[in-house]
Image 1 (cartoon, rainbow, N blue to C red):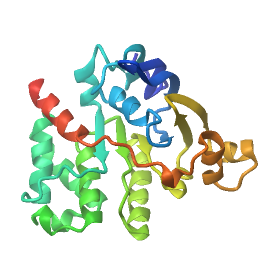
Image 2 (image 1 turned 90 degrees about the horizontal axis):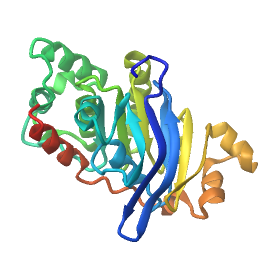
Image 3 (image 1 turned 90 degrees about the vertical axis):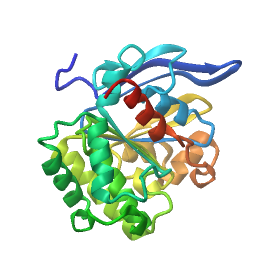
Image 4 (image 1 turned 120 degrees about the horizontal axis):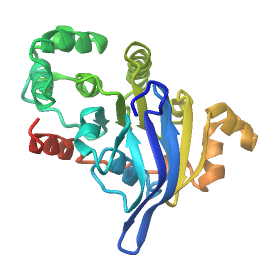
Length: 271
């Protein structure tokens, strides 16, 4: 089940209905280990619902999904232990220092106390915040807070990191540096990255891209193959071709309280 060549994420005919509304309609795809996988779609396409199911916060109506080899419905605690989350809505405690925020996360995930200091230093150095570790997060810029959230999301060495609009609202230079961290992470930790974005220059950096629309997966391929498929030079045109809307009209997904919910769930399961 956990062989190194099995996919990081396997989704098979996944369906989620809310009453009469079919939010996700029989979606199937897989994400390879160590892949940077872009998940795009207009608002209401079913992206957030799919992510919620993969992160164990919504139960599939039918179909199945496995994350890091664990079933999202039957092995929720195992899934939660093996994923990291970084969402656009910030969930840091602003009155604590960077180090205190990470320590709290480490304790929540039951990381061996003996390895916490070294792991904290490694992550903070990776995002260039080691020198600021004892300063309250309140004093950090938006870009620094996002970098700290990435460090926190990685602290427990997750096999799969979910990034929901990780650079939204940041200036181009900061966005670019966050991408440098994401790539470094993929190379040094072998982490699988599953991300949503509505910046097409970021989608270009993904190994493969899936586009959802109206609850269905409409296309999945590499950025180059997608552009070739519609004879376009830009991913914006690809997105328009497959969904009929421009990506910038697509509001970012609403995984608002996911981190808080997951934190509560982890606490509840005694970790």
